[in-house]
Length: 417
Length: 127
Image 1 (cartoon, helix red, strand yellow):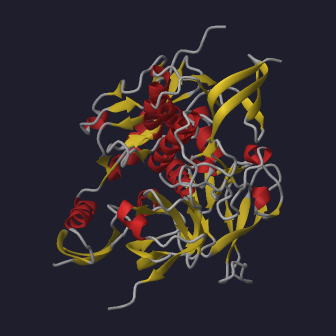
Image 2 (cartoon, each protein chain N blue to C red):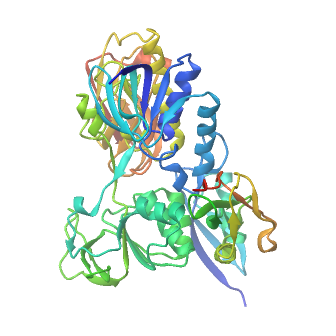
Image 3 (spheres, rainbow over the protein chains, first blue to last red):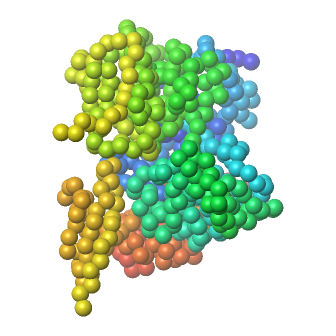
């Protein structure tokens, strides 16, 4: 089988992938191929028919399909090659890619650089260990969304939603708008996992109760879901005895977290971060394997697609510079370590020479805080787990930053004045 | 008789998420407290007086590869009209092909907004 040489291979065809491919092409790389598992480009966005996309990137309020079509059209205008219905099977650390589709059969590509943009997957019932039977009617929120907004099916009439992440909230509204009864959104944490705007517009608007510090302890039903048992949980998340109640329903929707999809990264021996579930990247969005870059939800799960696009552009530019021999290796590596109230940090490694943008996830909500990075402190009004905290390290800040092999990033309350 | 009512509105203009305390007397706002900025005050007042929402759903489509076409309203609509609009659009069936931006329903329920397609949808290839 002939091996084909390509400058940059982009794996995935969603928001991050398209931004990366477009940017690389604009930086002068001609020979780019996008490999996409699905039948069309766009990733998850074609099924996200709600508005709220593009507010920061385009300064416009777009739906998911509208947002992503701008990038699909641009990629087509730039004549970027893409292969849909193509499953990548393996990536080697030497950047050889094996893929398969029904047109080329088995396909081997030798890339100079690779951009990983495979996105993320939803956690399923099997990962939660909910007791009970295994009837029809238990779906992840994204599956329900695909059924309703692409396939045109109504998956249920009486719905309980477990998890208050944004997709769960958006599906609560979607079900309510289509005439289903949404009995409750059940959240194990003491605070909601979704954005304020979704709490207001998806739950309050439709009088859907949000049960904080509750969880689903069992599922009943033989062929189809008939009811779920919901109980209060204690501070450690364990169900409290004698607080159970039964909610009759025919559908249980799971919105219980997203996991970056990194099986391919592992075949390439890329080091992963246990906090994000994605590759460890430096400020160029380069992974532990030189010339392999990563962006979007495969690195860590974002809340706004606008940020995904920016990360994609950044990774695409880095990949282009790498191919053109214009990407100097970092002369120093400062590893950022999560301290107080920080769950994860991307990028995990910075050089400390050039400005960089850090994306942090916090563990718990806090007000009037300071973010400390080594000797630097940056004030923030509010930090919340559902919202990525963005910290811009300007040139001035980078010059002041102490240069050590390891720096701790913490979020603490500001001292009262 | 004077009627006094207190409501709490979560401001969604920025991530701070102020919880505004609104006092309403005889159906009119008399006081808005605990909001940090003028944009928030404006939002909270609108939420009480005439709340509007972005509106989006799907309509049936014939002749395409899939069964539903995503659509949205050109402008936000009154919050209390959302279900009426959804019911009205449940009756609509369009024919492929459709281009993003095509008007699917003009002046929906006399609200002065149009319903437009939010993606292109080609005709399915004949087999």
